Image 1 (cartoon, chains in turn purple, brown):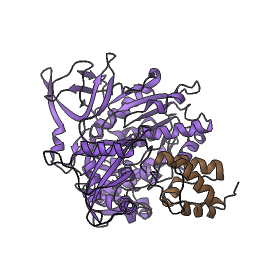
Image 2: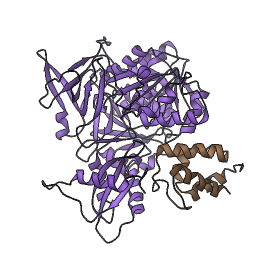
Image 3: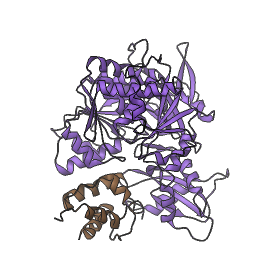
Image 4: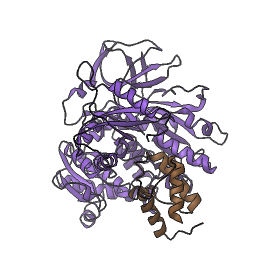
Length: 528
Length: 76
């Protein structure tokens, strides 16, 4: 089974920042970005980004380099991103809400990291030994002396534009890189398919490390619209909802779990700001339709709801579905729709043969969005990037590890993972990555992490911990983990046991642990 | 007292019979959905919009109460 996306021509050089530069040429006085009461026009943002690009090139960090961006949402973040792209380099988002130790181990994993852009608020999170760390504010004088014009750097569609960390299955996060052509294709598809334009003002509500945040950051600049950023390190529902109304925001991209929070906020207070957006684009985890159905079916809700699917390895979004007519009486898996332009979705069996309509298979992605692969590793994960022959023509393809099927209407439905990976509030998590961190906590001999679903249907992690001494304080373990892992990766509950049960093959018996976990939490909404 | 009201809000949103002044939000099973509910309750019941960044920096009833008092919020 192959779902073929519409073929749409891209420019000879599908390079994302060229679109931004064209808007800066055509409408220099249009507002590009607003954050914390400060605003910059397209001309002003372009000049700032150009100066930073000249700075990078002069330092030898031009085409093919990689630049870490460890900033809170701010105008400087866009300056750093656009400047990096203009220099021909790729950027790697480093979310300052992560603990310093995590940020340091992640940045040590970036091959050929040229420098990291930080601010006074984030510089302390980074180890100076990793790479050059620069503070844009401190560079102000130096940047001011550099030319404001576009740097003369050739960039092609095959060049890397950004790389994001995502979970693997070996306990170590993977750095998935994408190319300009794929990113351009994604933004161009969303713009043309949904008619986004210079009035499609956007508010970013997702955490910086997610692939969806890269799309949300660039989408309005690709269309000539205004980008609004929250001056908050963490998602702030009150601030987000207030900004939606105050600035007449039209478009929001978010994880499904964030949508629930915004819908709850609006429902509890009787507002209509969210309902009246032009577009909400969401996905990244199984959608719990019942969390939004009542709100979505109110007459006041005129917003187009787009339920989407994709993976970081293939430039974020691969398919999209208008939820308008999907309100079944029984809970089920809401479709994720049809492929992006120039993208094909293959449903394959273990031998990489196509399965018929309605039959389950592994979702594989081919086309413009297939990324540049994992940086700095040659592990088994690389085998997910492979080649299949379609009608005699070899095509590069990425095996997502997600299971799904195609409906008779030609829409994709995602069923879940083939492996142990799990999504917690939109973040893809490899339980072994969490187990490793717990294993490093003083007083812990070993740990196993399983997934549990709360009564409300939310996935959460439960850790079985084997102490090395007599006693282990759960709060102590939790506190230490908050210093080591992003919040969504810290288990919701801890269960101390004498030893981990093993399967006949000598591996940790996850099935038994999952059963023990269900028994333990039976009848409880949350871990006690 | 603000501290009492904060504890009552935590109990309700975290579905606990009892919360002590030094209990940690995350140790009580807190996560982002509940964070937003508590933030909303602070607005409606204490008349103050507490930034989520501050709620995460002050993850106990004692410390967030101290923060709210430092704002000089008018106790409704």
